[in-house]
Length: 104
Image (cartoon, rainbow, N blue to C red; front, side):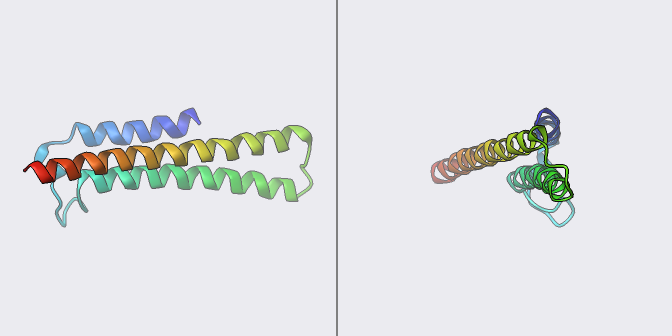
């Protein structure tokens, strides 16, 4: 989980450090920083889903020891945590942007 969170954190830090002009939607950079944040979360969740899928496949191939089942359960719970975190962060930022748009 630490690797996935570090990857997402690095992607978000890169967005935060980018010049203001690149934060505006355009054809060159593919959209807004909010869109980039959503894409970073999506990639992180995809990676976690791939990890779970790989572990699940190994269980089907006979590696169904209690330790492997426990690891798969932990990875599945991590996916739930990450999914909730992504939803919360995107929702919070979306609401803040909405509030700023109303005041502008």
